[in-house]
Length: 277
Image (cartoon, rainbow, N blue to C red; front, side, top):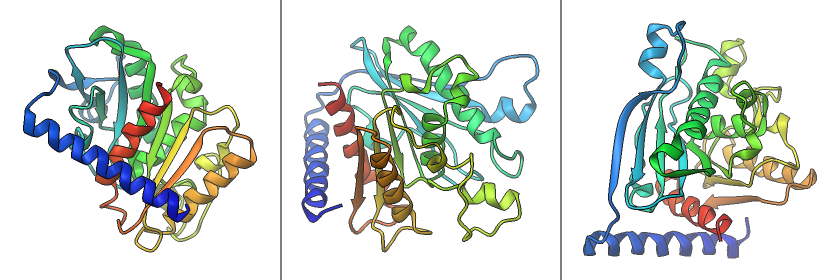
C-alpha cells in the first residue's frame, strides 16, 4: 500500500469517527432492535454443543427497509471468542449478524467453516423478514473470523450445500485473516504453526476472477502476527493476476493484530457505501 493510500485510509477513518461523535452528541440516531441467541441450524440431529454454539444475534434498523447487512464472525484462533456487535458498526444504518460457531478442540475442520456457511445461509433466507435486502449481504470478521469470511466467500462449495451461490454475497471484508491454511487447522494435523500450508482449506487456494468484491484490511506489517500482512498482500496480488476487478488492500499503520479492528470499521462502511452508489 502506498503512502498516499495509507493517508487516505487514515483520513477516511477520521472522517467516519468524527461523524460518529457528532451523531452521538446530537442523539440523532435511527431506531434499532436486537434479537439474541437465534439458532441458525435446524434438524433433529443437532448435538448439545451445536445447540449451544450455533447461535447468532441480529441487530437491525427498524425505521427503514432494504438495508444492508454485515454478517460478523469473531476472532479467537478458531478456539476461543464469542459473538458481539462491534460498536464501530452500530448506528450506521446497517444490520449486523454476530455469529458464534463451534470451536477447537470440541470440533475440528471443516466444522468451523460449515457453521459459518450455515449462518450466512440463515441470513440470506431470513433477513427480508426483518426489512433487509438479501441482495445487500456482506460478510466480515476479525482474525479467525476473517479466515472464515474468505473461505466461505471464495470456496463456493460451503454455501452451495445450502443451495446458495457464494457469488450472491455483496462483498467480503476480512480483517487480518489467514489466507493460507489456518494455524489451528495445521495444529489438528500435527503441523507447526510457523509452517505455511496452502491447500483446499486456504483462501489462497480458491482465488478466482468471479468472486464477490473483496476488501482486505490488516494491521501494520511490523506489528501483525505471523506475517499476516504479507499473506494478505500475496492474496491481493493473486486476485489481480487472475483478473478479479474489485480487490482492495489496506494496511493500518501503527496498529497491531488485536488493535486493528476498531480503526478498520470505518473502511468497511466506506466500502459498503461505495458498492451501493
